[in-house]
Amino acid sequence: MTRFWPPGESTRRPLVPRLAAPREPVDPARIGRRVVRRRAKGMDASAIAAALEDARFDARHEDLADDLRGPAELAEWERLDRLLAAAAPGTVYDPDTDPVVQAELAADAAAAADREAELREAARVAARADELQALRELHALEQTEPRDGDEAVRDELTRRAGGYVQADVDAWLAHALAAHLGHYRDPAAREAAAGLLPPPVLAHVVLLAELVRLVPGVDMDQLAFAARLATTEPEAVGDLAALLARARSGAS
Image (cartoon, rainbow, N blue to C red; front, side):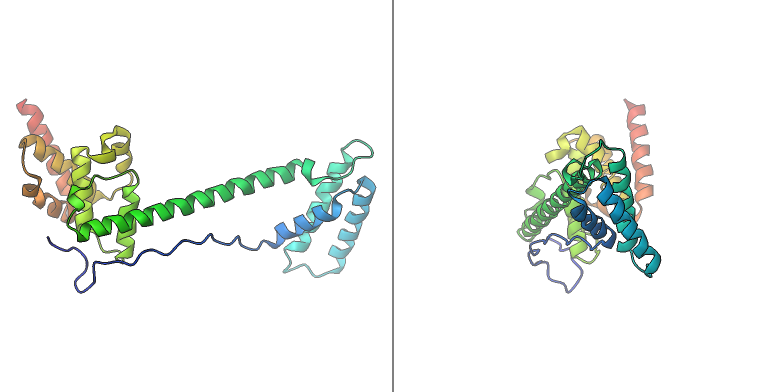
């Protein structure tokens, strides 16, 4: 079986290391708002008004040109002053009932869940890429049906190869898509693939589909030339497939 990795480069790829959760970047303004809320907890309207005056005094007498935290603290004291001024007499500030704080916490939780989902998906893609690479080395890729998400796995394999096009993986996906194998049995998956796979692979798919209709029962090995054509001239291959489709419909 022909190898499609760049000449002189081993086909074996090391396992991808466990992905670590990215650290949240330091946000001075966010820190400032949190400091204000901790200080303001339990304060009534008069105490917050006094703290606001102190913050305004500091802002007038300190150089805040390169400071993000100071203005954020001042703005937060101003917000809390308005909040308590509109509340019932005797109300004290409580972050647990502050709608702005609760909205921020909900947004933080959603962002954390999104980051966790991204990490899980990256780990899944990496593991599947290892699996497909092992199947390639065993010459068993052609006997494997694609799964949902293998388009991203294709991109991962290409990234690992330094951007080198994985011709055997592309041909495998094109064949599966044209023959409706694996998750491509689902029309929605086939439609989604149009936005996930590059033009040469999609051109290969449409040409394969038309050639199989033109010559029913043809061995896919006999159509290996379609991949070469699609790689070099994807637009021309699309035109050829359209021409074959018109000829087939006219003959029927």
